[in-house]
Image 1 (cartoon, rainbow, N blue to C red):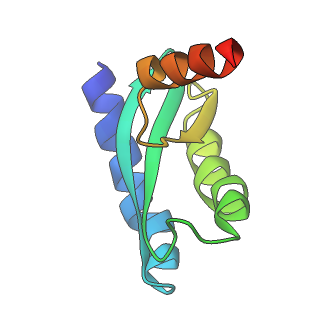
Image 2 (image 1 turned 180 degrees about the vertical axis):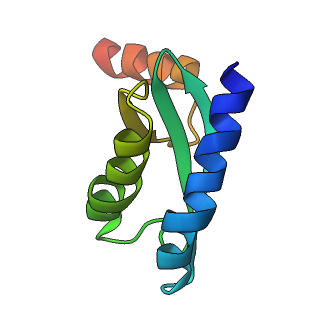
Image 3 (image 1 turned 135 degrees about the vertical axis):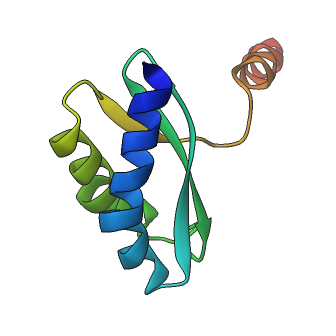
Length: 95
C-alpha cells in the first residue's frame, strides 16, 4: 500500500513538480515516507539554493499535500542521520 502511494507521488512529481524544477536545473528525489511525513532531497541547482525553503513550501509541499491528504508534511532530508545528530548534540552539551 505504501509503495503504491509513493508511486503515485512520483507520478505527481513527474507531472507537476519536476518540470518546474528542471527550468532551474533542479530536481527532487523521494527518500522515504514514514508516518505521513514525506522526506525528499532537493537535487541540482535546488540543493543549497537560498530559495529552497520557498520552493519546498510553494511547490513541492503544496502539490503533494493537495493531491494526497494522507501526507501530513513534506520535509527536506538533510543527509545526516538522526543518530549522528543526537551524538553531535550530546557532544555540544558537554562543552
